[in-house]
Length: 134
Ligand code: HEC
Image 1 (cartoon, rainbow, N blue to C red):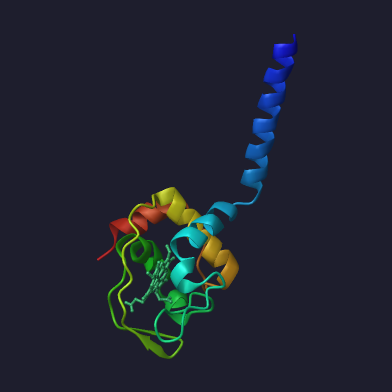
Image 2: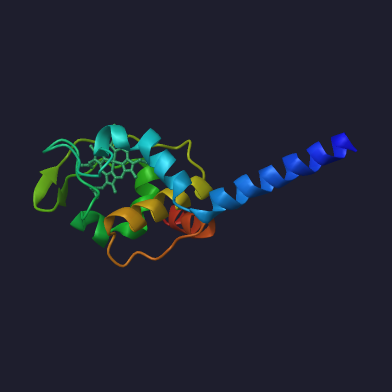
């Protein structure tokens, strides 16, 4: 009897944690951002002077959000103009992230920092973007 109660209590608690974590779809994206991106682009997305471009309100990102999965997965080594400043330090690929993680990360960025007209993206949407990388 007692064991059964513990069983139900554990089950209830697990379901509750699951519901709470589903309640905020941006949490996983935030954790991934802090771990994989914030050391360069900073926690507030402001970038670092002429070395690292900003992500927050970045015109480049607003115009190229369809490329974001590719930038994350394969890096970027180009001369780019972001909000009028030229950047040409390469960004290394972060290829350990899967489609679900990338979609959570992109939705987090979109939610936090204005990526223009970028829609909510699913893991399948990320896979489609990755298939189209050049
Ligand atoms: C080691 C430093 C570093 C890390 C870590 C890093 N980036 Fe970058 N990122 C750069 C640099 C440098 C550029 C400029 C690349 C160029 O000029 O070709 C850049 C460019 C970009 C751009 C295009 C320019 C812009 O500002 O819109 C995006 C988008 C971007 N990074 C997103 C990310 C995301 C998302 C992550 C985490 C998954 C990440 N970066 C991790 C250094 C980094």
